[in-house]
Image (cartoon, rainbow, N blue to C red; front, side, top):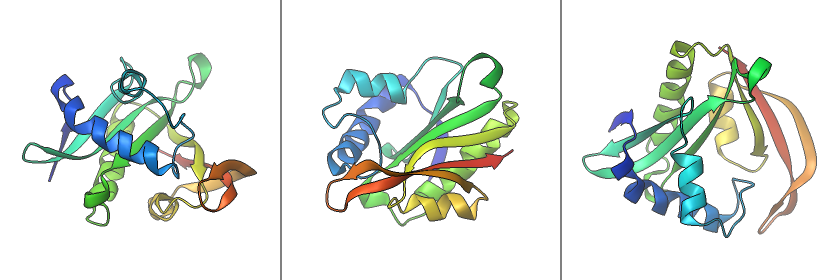
Length: 160
């Protein structure tokens, strides 16, 4: 597996993963009927945002995108998003993407990384905590999980 900067032609491999995650409806507060064009804008955004992909040969296994959590005086704190294909989960792809993103965010000069809305049922919570992220707040019932009903959304933070 290699992690590298995403290219425009990687979209053909990123979009099916994003579409799969949207259909699952358990991780992101995105509209479930988000169009491919809308998704492309979120996953291949313009600078200062950056996107990387985890690939095995030509196959995209997952993607990460990160950039400033806020503009202006809040732009020194990064935000990030991750997706991993269902067939690649449990193989270390998410771990590798998170580690690479944290290293790149540090190199980009960010002093912290903040996740604004991580569903409390998302298995990635444990992954983020292994990297040192702390849950700094939870909005109870803020996410409607397709099988569990209302669940909390965590805000998580890691100083870089």
